[in-house]
Length: 222
Image (cartoon, rainbow, N blue to C red; front, side):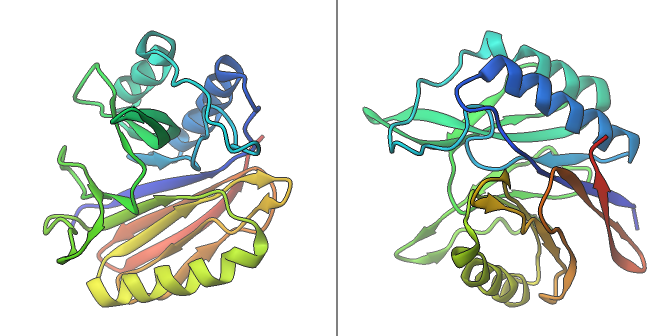
């Protein structure tokens, strides 16, 4: 079995400063590359900061995101960050995926998570609909982004743990590292067992999958 190393950035965004946030993302990406990570996820709206005023800013143009596309190709790493997207005349929370096999990022509505698998370029956004679950049959990881305060954390933790067990899929969650949205990034294995959970502060949470199962580590950002 191939070893697969993934990471969640527990991250404090600079509100409204996309250029500074991109530089900040690159620090996490460099740290993930040192751990040979093939996937890194950031919290929701990580490129613009949280929507405290309930008004989402305009999405940054692809040209501004080029350093992240370059990093994905340089490190052969899938990078998932958060930003607003425009869809059907409305501005909603979304994600941007930088695939190492493509020079162009793809943008999607945020959904309930992003489905990934080792050594696969097939990435899909997980949604619930009236017919049930649209979970990719190829997926071995559901990566989910959040910006949740502590009162919401326990409910979300319980839900993700049940989800991992029900669908036999590992779940990786990234959360903010500042203010009332602080800590709680985590990894659960395919049985719903918690592998590693972060407290507060900026750090990199990593998970490594091998024939012996998952192992987790917390790495403070230098």
